[in-house]
Image (cartoon, helix red, strand yellow):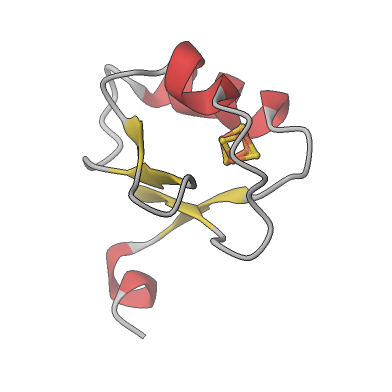
Length: 68
Ligand code: SF4
């Protein structure tokens, strides 16, 4: 699994980066993006980031979907 931030929906509030700094970073467009796969270890933080995102911009996708 990998978290995916919808670049159109993200408002760049930075909450997911604050919640899970090992997984999300802000990119040059001022939007968040995931930089690593979701593992058993960090999955709880990813869930928190997904639930905490004010605009629901974060989803989790299977690898094959990521390449569409
Ligand atoms: S919490 Fe949501 S809106 Fe805020 S930076 Fe992360 S993805 Fe974007």
